[in-house]
Picture 1 (cartoon, rainbow over the protein chains, first blue to last red):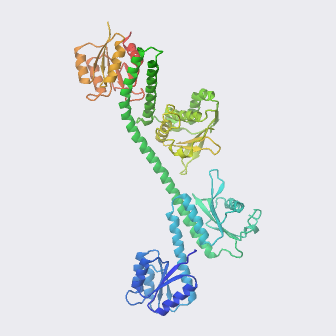
Picture 2: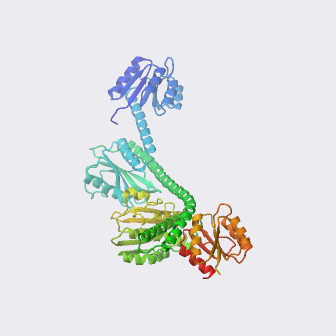
Picture 3: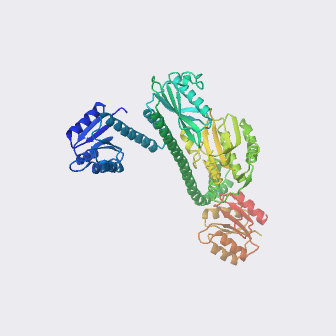
Length: 516
Length: 120
């Protein structure tokens, strides 16, 4: 810590108070002194202290009452009780009231410093625990974790590695490793460590001078590490990542105490990471619920709206056609009326898709072979794809189990996705469709379908909106903005999920998971 | 002899163009905007067909159609509606219809349907 801890000394005997104060100041602590319990409580209410050392027997408010009052104001305040001989029972009483420890008067300077050091360490650990558990956003949590562990274990450098989607270890956050070559060498060390761990569960692993250890000796750039400590991050009882903490100072090995601290810290972090993952899942569920809510509201609106609009629209269409019958085909009026007629057909199309999206009727579920649905849909659009120079590649998993679904509606979903892919590649390209059997985190089997194109991709700022009703990037009159919302509606009714991604090499991918 | 058709729809715009589209075929068209009046008219006069909207304020189209069928089992009945998007389910439970159109529909659609139902 850069700012030294601040300590309040409470004793009715000024000499003792001054002596304690002087000794602590000599070790760099910021010390204040008061001479009775009331003053102490007032001081705690007014200023922030890390630690209080208080006498018990004082005129006015005694030490134990003061202890209780101070804890009411600042529950995390650490308090050390200084007691004279023969007051053992009061010492025990004070411990029960939340004192950190007690000192028997007269005590030696050494004793005082040891107890103060321990109390402050506990306080620091509490602060860190609080920081970790109050940080629930994954990205912040990792940063807080690395900052804390570097401090607690007085290390020069540390990093936290997690696997990416492809299972390769990547540095999530690091401290004291700005140099890229060094960072990479540490990643290499972590990678080797993960390999050595296999699926084993260990809470902490210590390696002194890894460059001399035959398991790591061949790795470049690790000779400056004097002492390396690894904390595995667990997911479902298997190590999924590591926190790696290194000391590079000569002769500064990790002590048994350090290992103990590391162990506690590791289990805290694992717990916090799990909380954070749960939080993320909760957020996902929440946004899905909001989406579903939007859909059902729109569905009700759409039903009512369709009827109200279809009546006048029918009138416009019929009357326009009646007038058209009495209009010369080569006149301006004829062209204008034809435009009105086309506009009505456009409106009709929008309402039809709106209704199909909002359709309240039940989906007709039956066992469906997903590969077959996709193949049939591809056959439907093969000609269009050919016209637009779009190649189709298939990567279908064989022997897939059936999914419970509505054949027609699933076809509608794929037709939408394929049409969008085609429209994203006006110059031609490749449409690839694949299926595979996966397990979700809770072990349920699902079939994942991916539909990828080599088009322009989806702008990151609109990625979140593509499933919103009426959201479209197509020119006016070309898209209703309902295609993907219809897909989402259908997939939701199938208890599945549909998501949109951008491919790193350009183009968009839609993934669709359906439970088996 | 020209066929006689009764249009039942509370929407003036729709009655207007359907009447004119069919009148040009030489048929005799009557119209009304509610079910009760329609039933009264059907008791007074002979009709070959009725075109009935399904959603009207006073009596639901389904009810009107059921009563017409009870009154005149041989009547040709065509339903029109703006509320649904596809024709997969029977429109009026228990009543067989001669035809069905979803709004918005054009003049050729109603003419073709009526010619099919009534014969040229």
